[in-house]
Structure formats: C-alpha cells, structure tokens
Image 1: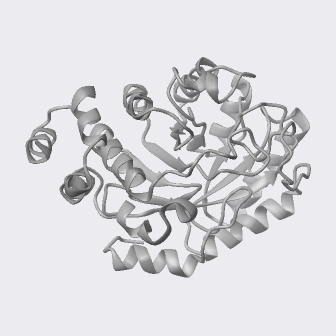
Image 2 (image 1 turned 90 degrees about the vertical axis):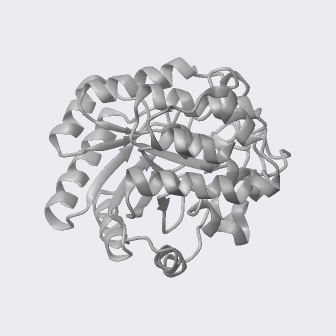
Length: 320
C-alpha cells in the first residue's frame, strides 16, 4: 500500500484522509517503508537544502492568553522568566549570533496577543538595523497584528511570518479559550493577502486524536502555506497539560512522514520539543520528510549544540 501511495503521489495524485489515517496507524514494521516514501517526496519536491532558523525570545512571559501548553501564559505557574521587550541593540546582537551559527533566517518572537505601538516601533527599528548591519533574513512571530503593521513589515522586507494554528479546529477548544481557531486562521489569510508567507504549523502530542493531526495537515494544505513548523509537545510543569505523557518518538516520526505525503512541497521544520521527544532518534525525522529545524535553542527551553545539529545535517547529506 505504501508503494502504491508513493507512486500515486509522484504521479500527481493527492493523498486522501482515509489513506493518511491508515498510514498514521501503521505498525512498526511499516515505519521504514513509510519513511522512505516521505523522504522520496521531500527530495522530489524540495531538493536537498536544510532550512536552518534561529530565534530570539524578545519578550518573555506576561501573556494574558490561556493556551494550556504554554510556559509563557501568565496565569500558569511555570517559573518562566518574564521580561519586557528587549532593546534594539539586543535584537541586533541576537541576529548577528544567528548568522554566525549558520542560520539562514532569524525570527523575532514576542509573547502575548500582539505588540503595543511602542513595542512595534522598536521592533521595526531592530529590523532596519539588522537589514543594514547583519544581512540575515528576518522573520517575525508577534501575535495578531493590525493590517497597517503587517504592511509595515512587508515594506521592511519581511517575507515570512510565523503564526501557528496549533492543532485541529475540533480539538482547539481543549487547548485555548481566550481566542478561537478561526482567529488564528483568519490572521493567516490576512498575512497572505498582504504578500507575506505564513510559517504555519502546530504542536503534536497534546492529547489529540490521530484524526486531529491529519485534519491539521489537510487544513495547512488547503491554505497553501510553504513553511510548516512541527512542534512536539514537551510537558511543562505548571501548565494544565503537565501530566500528559510525552509522545513516543516513532509516533512523532510517523506523523512527520504523513505530513510530508499530504503537504508534499512546503518546508517541514522540526521545532520545539525535538530533542526531548525524539531523543536518540532525531536523525530519523530528517529521513522521514523533514527538511528544516530551529537551531540554537527555543523560547523557554534550550536545544542541543549547534555543532551537533550541523553535523547531523551534513551526515544525512543535506546542503547546509
């Protein structure tokens, strides 16, 4: 069946929901053929380049939203470091460090529903200085923005904006109540209308059903995003989801492979939770259709050394 699906996708047939469900439920004996199929699709549609992204947590904690997975929600007692928006100079320095470690993109991330006008002014100043002094592609993840702000980012040369859907529309109410799944998908549409490329994905392993993962993948395909970060849930003490058992590494790898077979062309970037959830099997994710990763650490958790990540990418034959 896996060979038939691969042949069909390579000849232009779309994977349907039922077949995706069968693949996501595959037994361990079928994992390697599934990985091979996904890797074949990745090489056909995306080539052999690895998308390396680094980020700065430019404003930490202080978020009034109630996302149950998030260490930065102020209503959760996680011990997360909290601080207001960092200085322009610190953002520029972080961008310079991102370029030095080999990142092709640098993302400015802030917690909260969206920036104030004064915060946004500082972020624009930082982007201007990074463009002039550092020379690295700048992405942003600033929450919900007014249309005027989005157009300002576009005029500064911002090409990619991160705004994840997190999970399926059906399961979303179990994850967040202070804003809706529609709020998030509407924002993605506004970004596209303004000419920005949404970097849009979600989190797997939050207690959702396999059907929820498939629904998310098909929604991302429908809205035609070209960069899909897959975060693997890492339970944080103090959040409402702290007692959820972490997803099995092989289940995460199957999910990545099925996302590739559904989506085919976008960059699939393994983001937060990679080290904790995949453990010794990290390289398998990049043999199962993934072709991007965040390097240099995450928002509130550390990653492994950049040297190890770069070596892994090279060992797997990717162009870094």
